[in-house]
Image (tube, rainbow, N blue to C red; front, side, top):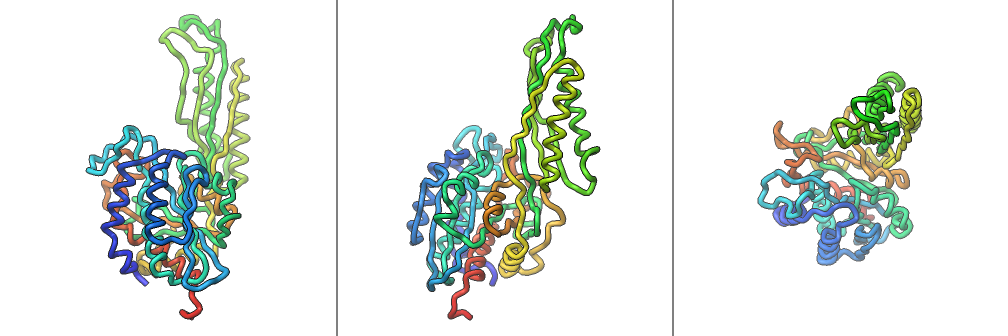
Length: 394
């Protein structure tokens, strides 16, 4: 079954929804307008139940099939934007300075709304479809909060599925992978304390800037010289803050960064070596360092059977030529990982690339490709119809 004709018929409406979301972006746990629009549309579509307030701004829709059945699946879309100043110049560009949909969550929300409209109209399945509109994917772990507040107790899906637009792949190309598909994430904060002094008399102080520089250099060797070369890991220091005058050695400096990994063993190694490296180098210079390794998201790991089901649904929508295996995981992070820790499921990529000049996600000139809206919506709908088949359909 290709793109559903009914979904293709309201493609223009989906574009209007998506561009409205794009013009009114909201940050993590602030998706008040977005959630209200989602809830209003779900009710207008005839969705059986619409629940709001989970994880502050989350929305859950419940659609029951034409036939009763014990099966249930969860389909998830994220809703939040990023703290980035938009530079697209689009007529529907963000109306909020410093906030934009730079990762395509406006498109993800729209695709799930499109599937919701179709499924509520046709109900060509047996059982229950749960629609999870999740806040705070970018910052705050909204999926974890929803789960902690009883998501799967109240809406007990057997499996969960989600997708992410992928500008690096041609528009309409589905990418799948069994096992780790995205990395675990940690934030690194290191505070180095030395002894302030006049810049012309460094011998009277303990320079934390110098210590920080040595820590940064040494941390680059953790992955290169501690991690098995066939494993994947990233350790990047992205922020160095300290000092306030040309001629003053400050008392403290602060380093910030990120770590990424795919296996628990690699995560444990990165944490241990980050803390040991910072503390021991500081000690060698007579300074002190407090290092914090704050785990944010686990790795996003696709369960094998669910991945096969998700892949087959993609083939049904786009054909085998437009469905390919990802050769390797991406080291970006995704908090759908929390849902996959509780339920079997899969996370696919849907290409949105227009050409070589396309901006990547998290870029101020990024803009979701509206051409793929009915493709993603059809994939969601196809999952429901294939995984929850009606008895009359055999």
